[in-house]
Image (cartoon, rainbow, N blue to C red; front, side, top):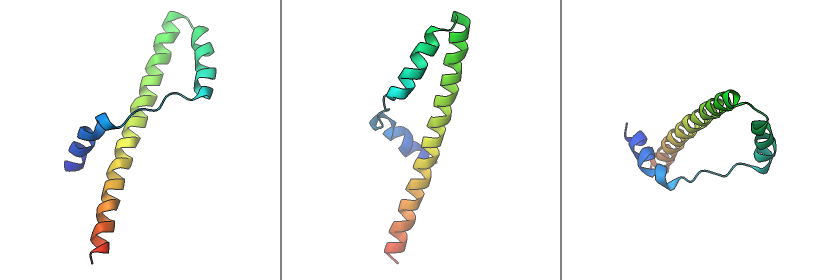
Length: 77
């Protein structure tokens, strides 16, 4: 779909936010308390969360783009 192509093209312009202080305060000590095997699982969980957030961002971009087009069409009517 064209909106997907636009999103993928613009992805380089979307800069990821840094982790919040609260995230660092919770996760760094937690990760240090884990075994190597647990760290691997924890990282896989974080990857799943990241993938979900990316999918939500992509979906929001599509909805916002479609809403913008509707507004332009309505304004020109």
